[in-house]
Length: 203
Image 1 (cartoon, rainbow, N blue to C red):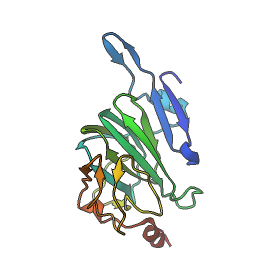
Image 2: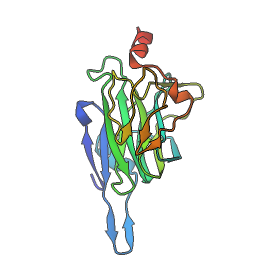
Image 3: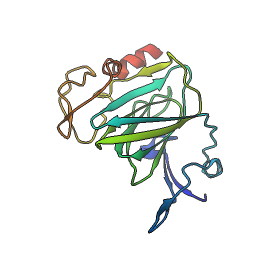
């Protein structure tokens, strides 16, 4: 592989990968390839991406946990400004790691990319004052296809960094803080249910 190194099957979860690009820097600044289909294919990640998305969020914003119900997407995510804690939860029926999560700290300094295959729920928490978040998808956005999970489901047990607060049985953000900044979530993301309810819906 020319310009990337790839760590595969993070935490034993098949398919999750952390990609570190080669950064060429000097006193003037730096250059790097942010994506190469050739290098990805050589790493066994032969994916055709069809859409790029970008968002900006402020400190304490938590987006997720989201997944697509009928049109699942592979995602390649990175941060171009600031710092986020990015999380994927395995929702693949029959997977030996169903319900297991893995998180990665993605920053503008480390320039790492998180490869998340189809069949995962995804979310992130902003740890810096602001963050700009980019990701590639291998399918287009389909309205009304989004599902979700409670970000604080104790059955999943995500350890969100810098987060303080007490679980009261729902995904409501009230009472939670990130470095003393109130947790900031959409109304929709505060209404997602726990994974045990999702399991029942599959049976």
